[in-house]
Image (cartoon, rainbow, N blue to C red; front, side, top):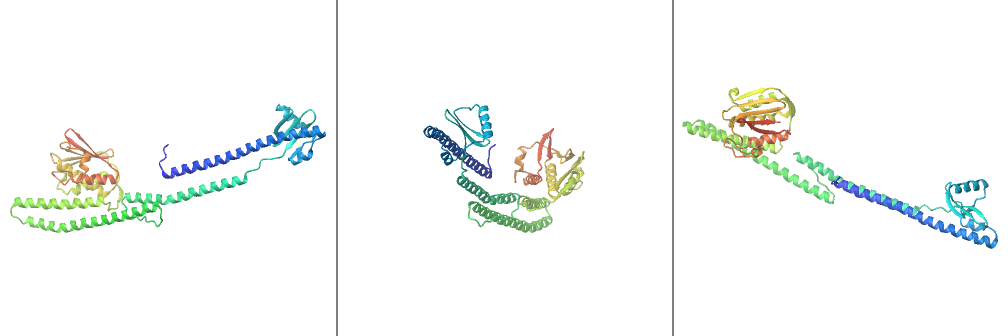
Length: 396
């Protein structure tokens, strides 16, 4: 498994450090015990030689020397018998043998002159100083780990605020009064958010002001065009002002969608009701002559009513506009909405028509851009197919 998270990497580094520290401590303890064992073996051999030489010289055992060496002579007959049996079972009946019996280090010295069973009471000292030093180092490493992880905590908060920002919420603040690099990044991001927020607000104000100011002369122009006597010029002027009005309306929709300047009101609706509301938005007389609807299997969707009906309205409007017979068919079935019209196949991939201001002879090239933007918000998809001279648009 590849470790990519910074926190995970820090945890791995500190875990390995602590593991190596523990291994070093255990190794040092074992090393000390090995040194002590080696020293004890040499000491016991020296004691054996000394006792043998002393006995040959004085004909007795130097008990004072044994006491000085912290060696005790076992004289209890029962204990002696048990120890001899223990050494016999282990095959250690020799002139000299050493083994552990009941957690005691026992020495058996058996020669031509005497037989002794001794207990070596010298124990390896526990390395208290070393344990204290290792404990301090271990504690410092733990404290260092906690300190570093605490220093990274603002990074998680910054990540959360960036995620909030990516969802379109610009009302965030992530200033920091600390002096580390994370604080510098947070302050720079806060400055960027402030600049973006001000830029969007100025853009929205600018667009709304322009659209508001243009509405009045367009309305006056339409009234004046109605007074013209020449029907040809009257129709031409009327078409121009209608196009300008349509352009402003489309700009308003784009501004609202792209700036995320709205609150979704998600509710459950029947698809048949959404289709009916979308047809009403077309504002055409006698829509039955333009649209045929087949509700084979109605279903429900969780959508924002205003935005979703705008999607369907644009799809219906495009279907009628670009059909060869000015007629479309709507099919609602199997959790899928199909809008079908007789028309030539699209000249380009569907994705190209999702771009704003795509080349269009009969519109502004914004309809499918708005459709795609709203469907993305609802996590839905628009698909396209062409069969038997018919264009089929599917909302899935």
